[in-house]
Amino acid sequence: MSPETEPAEQRTAALADEDVFYLKQGEAALNEALKIVESEDGWKLETAEVIKNGDVIYSKVLTGNRKVFRLEAELNASPEELHDILFFRMEEIHEWNPSIKRIKVLKHVGRNAMVTHEVSVEMAGNLIGQRDFLNVRYSSKSESCVYFGGAATRMESLPPQPGFVRAEDGPTCIILQPLQDRPDRSRFIWLLNMDIRGWLPQSLVNKALPQAQVDFTKHLRRRSKSTTMKMS
Image 1 (cartoon, rainbow, N blue to C red):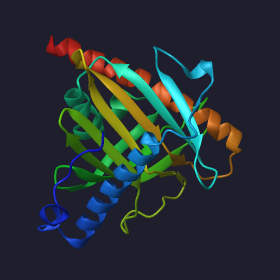
Image 2: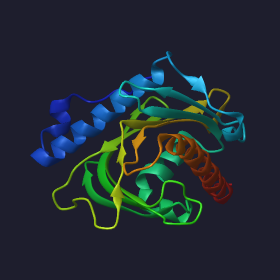
Image 3: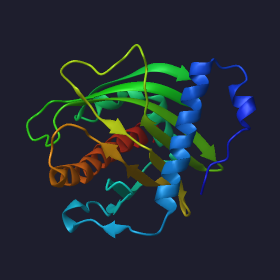
Image 4: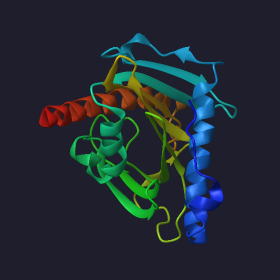
């Protein structure tokens, strides 16, 4: 299931040192996240309340007592369409996901990696509260599958911002696989691995994170449906 990548010297030959750092960090995050997803030990089904539209969420506890969540769903869009929505059109995500205030691409590293700053919306009912994220995001393809990897990163020009708690992602990943009998549909696998920081009870965090996956997938399903209707 792992993606194929070019030799490192080919990808980094024309890049500055900072770009090489981000590219390697993104690739390493994807590889580490895939190992977590592919590991069969320790996964448990989450409660029935978070299972919607046939979506299933599993969880496991990693070394260090961090709980991660793996959502599996089927979406009515091809991996290529979702690749465009989730990666190349990342700055538009706030238009269809109401939990995101904005996402700004701060730096592109080639075509397959970028550094982004994301700010969540402050709204009633948000158990976690407003956060910002500084992430490296990496994209790779293998045959007909698409892979995204990501992790928290650093950038001197954007230290933690006043008024925000900076949460930390990663390593995290999304896997997009075409259904065997329906290449216009995708199997969507999302590993959510987040340290939200701040002083919140872990029980609250463990309730809020899978719900955030359910909500995001609902909005993504609606967004991908609108794309499919425009193309038909």
